Image (cartoon, rainbow, N blue to C red; front, side, top):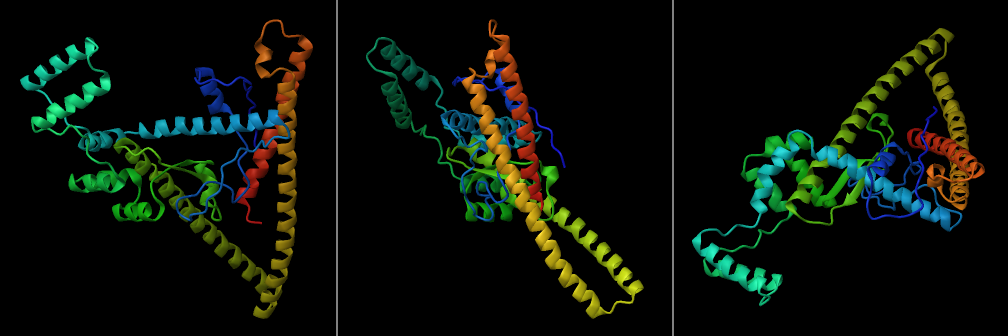
Length: 362
């Protein structure tokens, strides 16, 4: 299997803002995924390790590039998740739940009088904004209104969903039963899930760690909890695809065994003869598969080393952006373009090897 990967020019200068061009670069760029078994916790098995970028540098230049790759992968995930939360039904359901955790408002003539008085004091410099807020809340409390926002937790959000009769709508979006969602949260906490690899590549022996990215939900608000709950659809989708792939693989196994039994019958082999053939072939296949996997791992490491080498070369030449800078010597532009092209080939090799390592249980 050959995977072609486009190479993108990466700016050496860091910036707090992300331009539209950089966003497009993130969407178009492909970073080689980690080998099989490496990844964040899948929220199911509890296995946890760092999600490090592939291009671990041989120099400070490569280290900077590695950090930049990790930043881009997070940004790409954010772009994907923004599309996910805009799905039809998600925003509508969120709009029904979030208001239950909003702070109450104080209005009316009494509130207007207090606000006018405090605003005058604020404009005159008698009080600052923090004092304004404190006095506003105190006045509302004296009027019998508590402006504190209700406490937010996963349990309270789920309780609102059940109390308001939104369970069926919620379950249809998440793809899990309500009890399954509660059990998952109880066992794994609240996390944000997104696809690490293409969902269409799931096979019968695929590991969820290789396909699903898991990030801890640190900000606890009604909106962030809902986003995390909705992202459980990724876990649910993976399990369904894995189950389907296993079903297909089992059917293929049965068909292959039937063909083998028919062939053995034509050769006049007994049951013992067939078992002996299977034992011998098991050892043979294991040896061949081990050699194949070792070769893929060596090729993967070699491709990553090439990526680091071309990264260093590009940065020592002044960085990829120099290609578009007026006045850059033609010789330098030629060298940078050549390094970018070769780096793209190395990315393609690394990506192909990683996909094969993830998909082949050898």
